[in-house]
Length: 111
Length: 110
Image 1 (tube, helix red, strand yellow):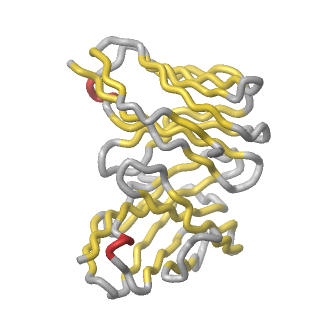
Image 2 (cartoon, each protein chain N blue to C red):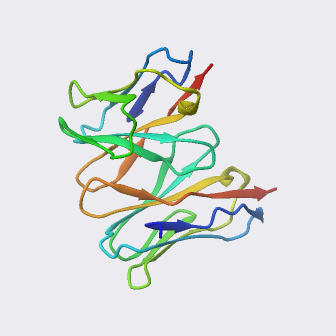
């Protein structure tokens, strides 16, 4: 009965090598989010979609891109990962009641 | 000033104790309030959701919202070692943005 699914759970990539993280949801929620979370910090919003309407946070580096081909799926592309991009990446959704549900996260390691 | 303030702890309590976790906020427009539990290296799990003011109880967990004081609390009764985790508060206006506290690390000692 998983509601927000993220793949892979662990990803190792090399410095500068593009990587794509994926998220899917079974909640049929309009809004999907990508957060970056580093150790002992709150999740930091990178961007969100309201349906297909893309909303980028002002301080999200250009290195981070996202795609949402349909309601259920959302992708995070990191074009040229740096060592500072090593983190947990969290996908989340929210519906009309404004409850936000998170996936299990993808832990990204950059070597 | 941050939108949401949360004491990072760490907080350490004996098993069976009552735990009180708190957040304060500055934006009076917040209407939706959530508490998440996050185990190490896992995603946050929604524990409690409250709309506007008042109390909500679910098993050993009680969430309180005091909008006049801009203060929210999570109480855990009969705390268990399995409650050891980081607890994040989050809140939202009517839009799609959520604002998080930095999390409080809790350890329940058997």
